[in-house]
Length: 111
Ligand SMILES: [Zn+2]
Image (tube, rainbow, N blue to C red; front, side, top):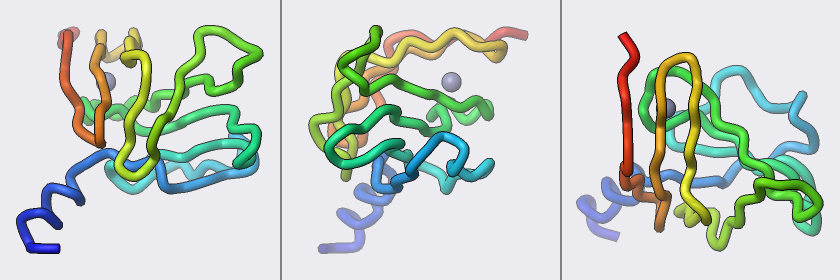
């Protein structure tokens, strides 16, 4: 892999960490790395720090028994459906993650 491709790859969002339960997720995650909580056969959550870098954590349900539910079609780099639409104290973050790239739909800064 050439250095430019390596850089592009490194910049992408990956869900390459795993945890048995949400309590096992470290307080600080490495940038651009998400955690799949649960087991391979029964993933429950996808957890990562929002790419807006305003310091809020995103927790998406992967369990088909609950709604809303997201599907991870690839973890490294990450492809996710549907879009992430988070309203948190820092604002509104709405984006699609495809092949590890974040495409913003809407982003508001609350001042
Ligand atoms: Zn955000």
